[in-house]
Length: 174
Image 1 (tube, one colour):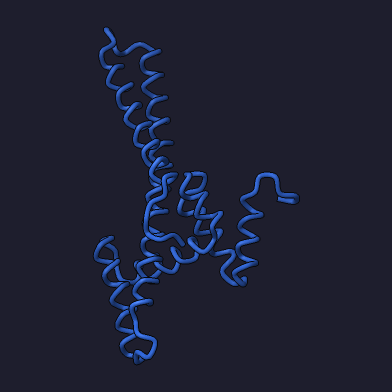
Image 2 (cartoon, helix red, strand yellow; image 1 turned 120 degrees about the vertical axis):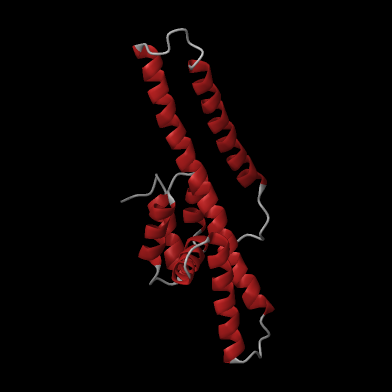
């Protein structure tokens, strides 16, 4: 996992997505200035803009999902690091429940959903190639979760190797 700081590539990726979305909205606004505004060419371009925007929004959603996953996984790791090694089981359990409840409140989801999200986030973040594919928008959150689920019962090196192989376009026997 990272250190909680956005890398230059992550900032640039989000900025590029927002810039692309803004440009598509500007193009759409310019279409409204067309004299008639109802001709087949104008309607076709308006349709194409909607599809392009959906693609950019999907990429931005994946980037945001990657950031949410990383922050949730790192929040758990930080909470674990703040727990004294000699802490009683009751205190450890309280801290685990506390972080789940805090994340649930922030994301406005149930405690059960937050617990599941944290588990999935930790799995995704433990697979660098899957996390990278999510962040670039090559995969959606759902697709990335499937990869994490499929590697769940493997030891960490094998899970990373499988995810790397699956996501490598040049891999033999894909």
